[in-house]
Image (tube, rainbow, N blue to C red):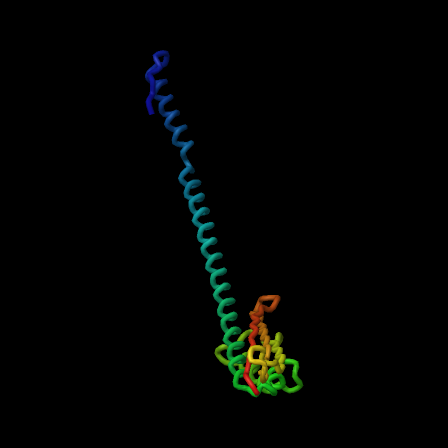
Length: 178
């Protein structure tokens, strides 16, 4: 800081003026570093909160994906069992609306226990619809085949979530018969 001499003042007055000016400059600067540090801490804290929020959302999305994959695996497991079942008994064994669906009940029990258990399945049971019919061959014109249209909807509800999630798959199981 450059000071210009003031010829109308004495040396003592100029000295007092310089001291007062230096005190004024120093007192104006007091606390600025503290304010800058507080602003930096605030910005850093907001950044950390953003990272923590993204991490929490990431964990939530990964959990949802895991449950969806488990539901798909359970549905595929039931479909693979249906391929080996007698086409005439498929609806009685696997349909959730049947009077005593033995295989459906066993499958639902596997969904509620074990390492691949889905939360909330007991309160939101899966729905399995089996529509089996004989269809004539259209290409050759002779004979028929058994066709089962299967729709499987698996529900789950993680703790703390108000509405259940679902996974639905549809398949056609065809066996040629004469």
